[in-house]
Image (tube, rainbow, N blue to C red; front, side, top):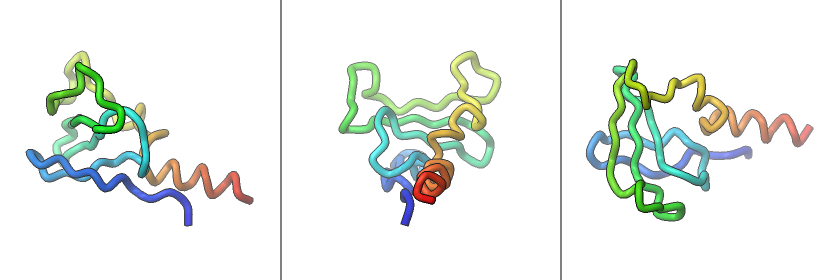
Length: 85
């Protein structure tokens, strides 16, 4: 049924990736304080992806939850289920 959530977990922050299972690019998640966390995805690993990153709200490189909404596993699931109908 639909798309499930990525199973990757960031060991440092104990966060689960909020992307859809099988996504490309870095794993990502937001914590309770709104900080944006990124960590390497071994399938799509590039030279710049070798470190964990934490970006606070307000920083120039911060990505808002609204910008990541289309890649969130729940939104991907909803979009896939709508296409089936």
